Image (tube, rainbow, N blue to C red):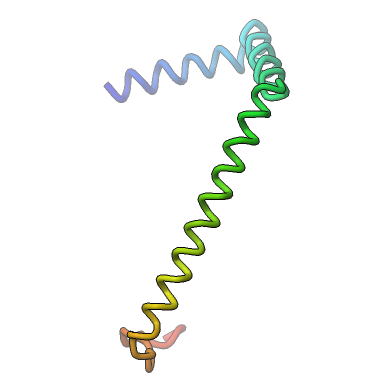
Length: 90
């Protein structure tokens, strides 16, 4: 099954990159993707998702900071490496 999938994918890529019609189709697809990306509706959604992701990351960073500061008060400081490691280069 893997060999058949690889063959189909290879044939498709060969068509796209190896023939004039394939390259024309590829250029059409690139043009469509570029137009779609520049669409104001798409950019509005991208902005919304970016803002939501940023807010989530800030919330998680704040929660993580609180968790680590409360954990460090109950955990004794480390005195050295947890595992004996040989010196580099030996």
